[in-house]
Each structure stands twice: as C-alpha cells, then as structure tokens.
Image 1 (cartoon, rainbow, N blue to C red):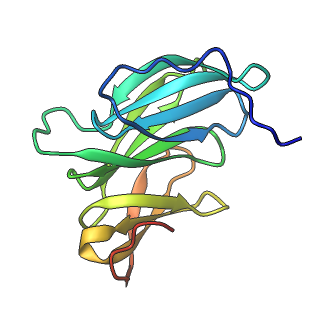
Image 2: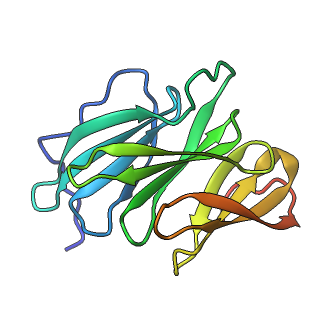
Length: 167
C-alpha cells in the first residue's frame, strides 16, 4: 500500500554523534551511517524484514593526529560491496574503508579532494571513478578507484562549478 509503519527497534546512536546519511550494502545485510558531528562512521547489520539495525562497529573518518575542525557529509558503498567511503569537510578528504566479512571496517586511507569542503560525492555506475564536489573551491574533481584495493587517485580532471553541493 505504500503506507509507512514505525518499527519497534530503532538504531541506538550515542547522543551528539549527529547521524547525517546512511547507505546500504548491495547485498542488503549491512548499512553504514556517517556521523556529521563526531566524524565517525558506523557499520550496522540490517534485517530487511523487521527493519532492525544493530551497530556493529564505529570508526573515525579522520587520520590519527588530525586536530582541526571537521564535519562529515556523505557516505557511499562501492558497487562491489567491498569498500565504503565518507567525505570529511575540514580535513577535505575522502576516507576509505574495506568492508570485512563480519561487517567491521578497516581503514584504507584518506585522499585529498583537491579542494575545500567536500559534501556530496558519487561513484560512477561501473565503480571505476569517484567524483568529489568541493563546495568552497567551486570544483568537481575526478578520482580513479582501484578495484582490488579500493584506494583512490586523482585523475587530474576537474571542472569549475559554482558552489557544488549535490551531484
């Protein structure tokens, strides 16, 4: 009928995290929540029949030792389901993680978005490229995704667009 029904088992998130966006794993058993205020990413198990989310693990989207101001924005899962990415506004990077078989996350590293304040970003349907928007530097920059490692590298291609915030 398209009617919405409230589930009795909401995801319990630590107060003050500021959950911003969520992305589902293509296999339908995991979901990932990025926390805007604490610069963290949570992996969760997902039961599609009951609507129940259970937090499995939470990791920082920032490199060890970073002390500046930061907030996160977008979270996306690679089409192959092996990797998940989140944007850091302040550190101006895309944080990459490998999705382990138990749903935990292993850090792949941080790639500069070549600009300031990356908000939304997209992975092309083939999973070969990531396009990062840099809202305060008026650019969209292209990155190659290495399929076996999930790591990103700049293609050197960038376009000038006034204050991009969503692709």
